[in-house]
Image 1 (tube, rainbow, N blue to C red):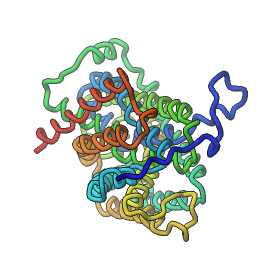
Image 2: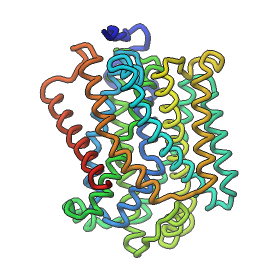
Image 3: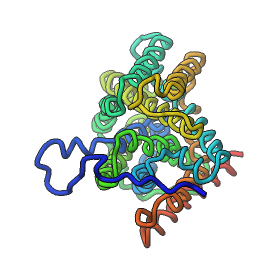
Image 4: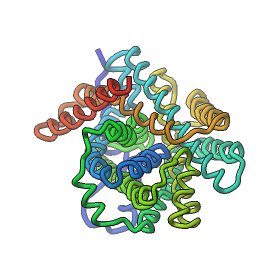
Length: 422
């Protein structure tokens, strides 16, 4: 029989009171794992997928981004409750409630998508290195060393603050969207156009679903709320943190779609085989400042924060299933296996990218793979929500039905993708 869930009580963390903020600490309290994981959600692969969507289908890919916003929140909110209430990471919870075999299956999917994420993040950094005239091997190696150093900085909270600071560079995508001067008429037309019968649209739609809901996000946020020492008293705060992050990440995706639709698509630029070529297309329309520096800053921010989150999620998930110590709040000698896995993930990703850099089709395919794995990932998440949580913390009524329906649609879409691809 599985052990009773360990419910975190209020004394373990500062309480969160709603109401008008009396100090800046209230706003800082909302800057947490939710914002971190959502900034990572708009990673290099997501940015390239959004750019491809804007080039091929214009503003018709904006409506799906809006629809995915609440779905993203519902999924990540479940991970928040699971982590805070049970004080167990996602891999540990699966192992405890479903056995080591299912636990190994879950981390296998995590390994696949985490490796895919690291390859795309380092590929994006490699592309920016090329833009700036820096040899790829130097740019990627330096990025890997910086990310490893961040993990060894000594505390989860420090890792989170650094990650959010790096991810804030993604504001650059809003700037490029503003400089592109999107057409209001085209926007309205795009919002009312859904070419669902077109196979190429469905393929990119699957890629966008995979770009928004990624397995490593679930593993990361469930572990992060534990390392942050949040308790049941912090659930409301965690929900605000997650909700704000979900809105921001989808607005970033929309900004990229609008940028590509208003510039690359409008000027018939379709050759998108690398970050450098996307930048060159933007440069030809918006000039070198927007095309290289601003767009490049957004890609660097996306690559760094997503590589950090994906590698942490992978190290947490594997360590949880194997039952070895895993926390940034532990010293290296207290959790050597966790730090070794974390470091090797970056080294492996960097080596693969330095050996051969190929971006756009690779990243779109990775996002489609994410969509294909969603039935497994969401299936485990819904099962844990119903089994691992005490009854008072489970979803109920209409809200539960809505979440199940939306997750079912996403899972069905993932299965459809498997049939379509193979």
